[in-house]
Length: 395
Image 1 (tube, rainbow, N blue to C red):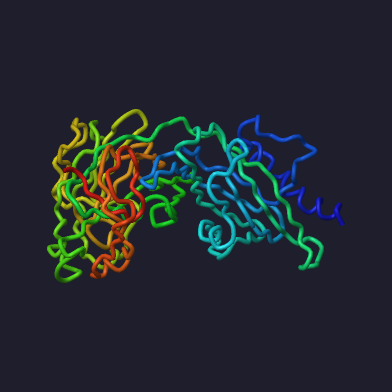
Image 2: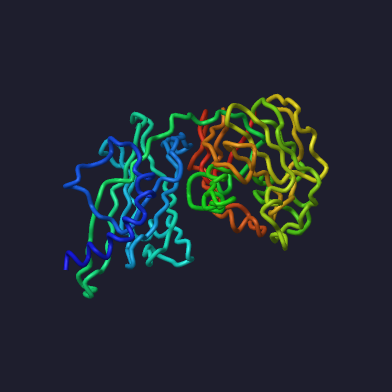
């Protein structure tokens, strides 16, 4: 039975030897052959993780694992535990939490990969700021599959592998692109949300441009997003707010003429090229570009090639592109292309936390914000806001 099992697995694995060699990572992480496990699923770290300090006072390494079932069997991914120097990085992904972080590319639900299926696992490896920054990481992975016709006796294997170096690039420190109180960091760090799960195959290469992106909306004095009709842009008091340069640099990309959309629903017929609406891209350092999206039609105050200073107004907050309500989409990326780039970690120089909005989906329909004032409150410096944290920028 063992010979048959190994034979069924070995052919597809050997056929992908080049993939496995490319994914092997640091040579120092390779274990002795007598301890190696023949795995029906191959994993690869999509981009080297780069730690960033969150407002929860934890360091987050946000990255993706690509998983490919190279066997003709159904394989259950039971557990994925990031490790550094033998120590765990946060809680292992298992059960419902793993299912929530694992996107099977066929559209199937759960954590079982069918023959030839692939998936992306969205990892947030967390550790204390008191710990030394790891140089490399690996993963303790548990898989199960049935290869003997007896569903009650599956093969279950655990191995330590899939190593990756940790990026030495430090998070970009930027000023806020906004001013005032009541700004909600929607779709922010580090859950699997509309930004985090936006992996794009552009010209055949997987890109994750919105890995650390934030959508900023502002509550009014009644803790609501708008006062009036949901579809009326003038009902949103923050519509038209000045968008300021978060760092000095040179403008390398602009789009200025897309029309405003009607709030309340996404536009029909949207293309990926129009997703960011009217935008500004500013080169703020080598391999670092700040992206300001969904700006108001005709409001851009800069041109391509122009140098800008921190705090300089670039344009006004709008509702252009693939959007269902006024907001500023902001992130930092590694190329000037909003599509052909990967998101880089960044931190704001300073902000004040005012709590956490617990019902972001409901406030978009007109509900009053349910704010937990006791969470994520106080002054923060050189940290990344957490998802749905309520923020005050400036004095």
